[in-house]
Image (cartoon, rainbow, N blue to C red):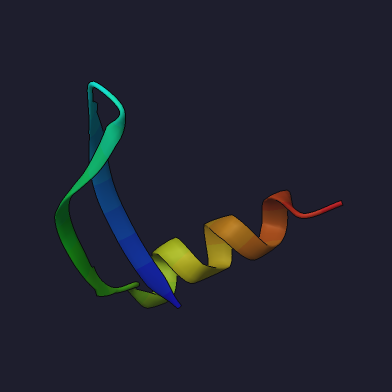
Length: 34
């Protein structure tokens, strides 16, 4: 699982960073799924 940070610049999506999610971030994400 990755954490991705991006921004819109006009019609283009610009990638700022992408990294492996921490254990806590994965748990938070999975808890929020329906």
